Length: 266
Image (cartoon, rainbow, N blue to C red; front, side, top):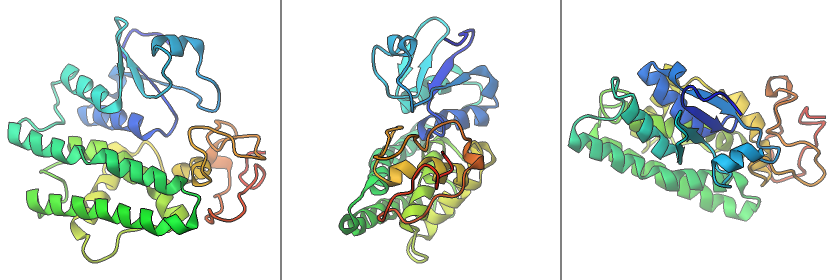
């Protein structure tokens, strides 16, 4: 078990919910004030971690120095924002904070749709997921046009809403790769500008498109959270061999799945 002389976040590699915390701390200039401990999701959770979390396996989890345990990424973000308040990321004005939270409240359904889309194995269901994703982006576009039509961010800077959404924009690179999904050129200009500004922000450089596409191959085949597909000996989420040494996976997700050798895992 890691040393806990400062708060420790236990997290999954390339986890978007953990990346939110990393971005928040980068914006505050306090990345070194919290330790991050990686958990290998291709193996059973260690007993000490299950004891810490009361048997739950969802990550990230933050353990404070005095033994407190905090779960759920948005709750952990609120804790870090309050604890390290000297450089706030959330809006100070009460109304602006409410607007920020109204946008953040839309993240859950958006995230769920994106993950269900990549996990889907029924070609006939693809169009429905595609349209549902566009519906979320259309809603964001309207919201952003109302509250800051000139953009690119919700307000004058990369803030709490951007910290919440940016990791999901990055993860949905897997939809671009495996489902050929992208926003239409017309009708989504405002949300497209927001997404691009979020992806380009220097505080959000923890992961790359290549890393996400390679690690999430098994999601594109219907297996999430380190689960093994039939005929496979290794998950695409294994630490070794490193994702950097692996070939890019095949983009076709509805045909014959790639084996360990084709994925560079053998």
